[in-house]
Length: 557
Image 1 (cartoon, rainbow, N blue to C red):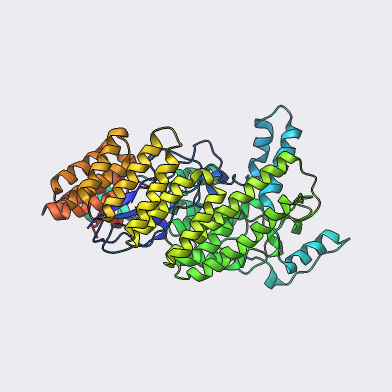
Image 2: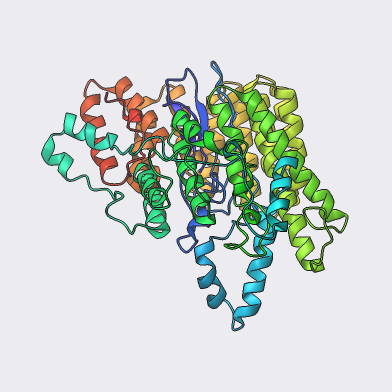
């Protein structure tokens, strides 16, 4: 049958799940769409590999950019009933991005008449973002480095991080390959996308590739930049030094591999990093390069990525164990701060304002970890513990209570518990009554539509989706799901017209894998000329999408 997508933001399901498969009922899933602000630094985009804003079927604000957020609920597939989708993650309390070292000079002189004061402020931000509690063995090495008088501190090779590229090039363009096969060389020659050679060989070029969804080319460019740093192909296992730039590059590359679904490749390149606690991943290990700076060079979201990767490889329990370890450190740091100490438990000289900012950051990070744990439990189909975990996230992101409760209700729909789902949706209605504006009303209507989907009442579901479209004609989620309902009501022609009109209205926004999967499936049901219509979609995709596009959704192969 068809897939009914959630529209929006780094999540994510397209990167985490295999190519879309035929579902016997509307499948409500999530996918990526970069809405990062054009003026943001590369680190702003990559501090979390899920930084992109998500617009899910549970999110009434489909199509509107939002700040960084935790990933949506990764609801596993179910057959025989509509899947409740992931809701939009917390946003307002999202942790700030770790600053890029090479951007410090720009930041110092761009935002203040007092460069020295601004530099001190950046230093405080560094301390807050970089804080981490090393293990006992690592702490001993760092203490030895700090107290050495002369000479070097010798560390066993096994205790150092010696990464290197495990493969040197994964570039490819499935869209162009299909054009060569079905449309000929002349048509394929018109397909022009950016590659690693056509952009600046720096973070600026990297951001450019990612913003136009040329993720494979971005992986290649990361490899070039890491090679220039001495950590290229064949360098794995050889001694090296690390910088904030090199760790940021590794994080970007690994996050892109996960987004592309290349989980085995990501695991191979993650392997030399161990548990991300080796002494050479801390600033104190390089006192002459980073004098006075303390903490870990590893971006916090790289730790989340390291933990979550295992669940995509079929080892959710290992993911859960790793997330528990990250949670333990976050909880300890937060406890230290709340006791008036520094993050590492030492005496603190931070201002009250700085302490409050640190507490907000680490509460947000702890909530982010809990969110990942809940997603992992959901993947393991431990619904009771998953729901408990999602409830705990509300404590860290109270402003996101309606979205979280909506998501929990949709989990209940997924497992067939209609009464519990209805109870949660009623709770959402009570919470949103305190809120003014259109978004709360749309959220309630969306929940009602999904409740009817869970009862196979497609006529009522369509009525609610149509009501949403009257209030917000640009709501892509309601538009797509209304078309799905029409199909299940036996109105194939009407369903096709609605989807085609949606794609023609704004090709750049609606030419997405899930929409196209629905459209091509309907073409197969409707006409023996489906192949020609699919090829027309291929031509449209070729002019809009980058090299990361999942061409399998066109069902041409």
